[in-house]
Structures are given as structure tokens and as C-alpha cells.
Length: 414
Ligand code: BGC
Image (cartoon, rainbow, N blue to C red; front, side, top):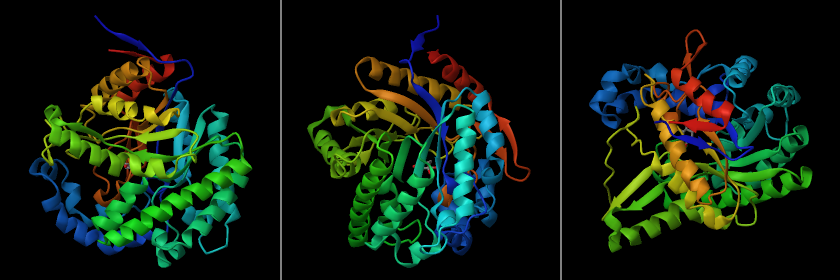
């Protein structure tokens, strides 16, 4: 017998993207870094991926895999992509504005590019799709990376000025995400040193994360002044940390992991968010400092598929007393063999959390389209819609039609 889960009225269903990953034709710090690092990334693919991944995705041994180039050409094809969105019954779409298009040189704003994003927003509104706009999803204009990006305090004033420009240009946008996953960026780029600018310095990391906090607060203030009814937040990457077997040591470790990864940034920006934006991909079962995930099922990126994670991560945000939107959740699944079940089981858990009192108002799957996955390149396929990167042909995956039924009926049936 099938089970029926009805979601609250007005629940927003949709999907998410980011400019660098889908637009194509960019010139920013990442495009430069990709050119310099494609060969290295190709060589490292052997050590970074398991044997089955290497066999399934031989593209990872081709340096071209690591150059974003045209990617999904969404900059040109956005109307077509939004038609697909509409057909799939989605009511909300997350996109990011590419700062390097808007302000390619310091203080010189490109009116044509501002117009482009106005048209993009209009194209969504015309289809009755509500935009969620991210102002910074990890990429910089070259002049910003030259001055040190978020390591340099000066960026706060530049980011605020750019935010003001966009708020002025897009007054009809209600949902604003200032920064995408600040701590993911800061830790990859300044602690682990595997993303541009590839530093490994705790001091730099601290500087970056503190400047990100200030940049968010300033941007929040500007947005609220310009568009008082807007809902502003940071997209927060939270992991569900589980204390294995509830052992005391594991509980203590969970406490520290939560405080550092999940709560630190949110506490720093307290009073400067109207809603919470949760991105969740990971569950980490802690056992004496080691990860003890069962990994019964994994995605193509070898990430554990643990459907309970999303609801548990959302539940843990209850203490902030703000409405929650899931702004990213998904998996790389090139043959679409696990996506439908993973979405449905995750949503069933989420529904239970909502019934118990978690104030979750929307769910945006990552991602609408196959896209360019940062230092991994093109082989991880997150899309509800498959993209042939040579011809730009879009093919809606079977799981997307299943997800569309949920979006259209505001109801999940399993
Ligand atoms: C990022 C996306 C990325 C996704 C999958 C998120 O942390 O915001 O840009 O594609 O994870 O790795």
C-alpha cells in the first residue's frame, strides 16, 4: 500500500544552480585557475577517486574535463531551461549573479549584463516562478582575486557596493542569498588548499571567514534598506553529525563538530537573517573521531546516500526560530538509478520533521541541470535534466518526472 505525504500549503518546490557552473563564457578567478590546473587535476584523478569511479568516468583523465568553458550554456539558453522548469511544475528557482560579469573592472558596472539578469528574472516571473538570487557563489572578478579576495578587508566595501547595485536593479526579487556556503569555500581554499587560491593557512582561513561574516552583515543591511520586504540569508552547508551509539565521547565530538561547522557562522550573523537557507549533502557518523558511515548506498561521488540526513539537519536548525528553505540537496547519479528513491525517501523524512514542528517552507533540488562541478569537472551528473555538453541538448531524466509529480501535487506518494 502506498503512503501519502501532503506538504503544507504554499510549500515552494524547485531547483537550484549557480552561474559559474551553468552559464558558460566567463572570465573570473576560477576560469584562470582551471587553465593553470587542468593538467594537475587530471593527474590527481587517480588518487582522488576509487577504482569503480575511474572505470565509470574515464572523462576524469582528460584535461578538458576541468575547463568550465561553455558548460551548459545557460547564459544563452535560459528561456529554454525555464520552459523545462515550468513543465516540471517547479515554482521556485535558485540562480546566482556572476559578479565578474557585472563589474569586470573595479567600479565599472556593465549595464548590458545588469540588463541580462533583469531579463532572466523577468523570464522567471513570466512563468510564475519565484527567483532565489545568490550574490556570490564562490567566483570573483579578476580584480577582486588580485587584491586577495576575502582575505582582504577591502572586499567588504566592494561586495556591499555590488550588492547595492543588484538590489537597485532587481527590486522585484524577494529571496536573496548573500553568500553561498562560506565555510565550504574558506576551508577548501584556505585550509585544505585544493581550490583557488590554494592556501593552507589557518590564519588566512580565520581572516577570510571573518570578512565573510562582515560582508554578509553589510549586504544584509543594504538589501533590507533597498527592499524592506525581502528575505535575506546565507546559504548554509550543514552536515548531520551523528554520535555513534550515543557514546559519551562521540557526543562530545558531535558537540564540537556542530559548534565549529554548523553553528559558528549562523551565530555570528544572528539578527542579520530573515530566513535560513540549508544546503545538505552529508551525514557524518562519528566514532572516536573516525567516520563510521555505513555507506550502504553511495552516489557517483562516493558520498553516502543517507535520506534521514536532510530532515535531521533541518531539525537541528529549529533553535534559530526562523523559517527554513532547503536550497540545495541532491546527488550525482549519471544513470539516474538512485535519484528518484533518494529524493522521495529524503522528502518522507522531511515531511515527518515538518509534522513534528520544523518550519520548512521549501525544497530546491540541486541541480536543475548537469553542470560543472568545480575541481571535479563535468563527470558528476547532478541534474534533473541531462545535458549533452557537446550539443547542449537537454534530456529530462525519469526521476525529474517523478519529482514533478510531487511539485505539481504538493504531495509525495511512496
Ligand atoms: C555547492 C554546489 C555544488 C554542490 C555539489 C554545494 O556545496 O554549493 O556549487 O555543486 O555542493 O558538490
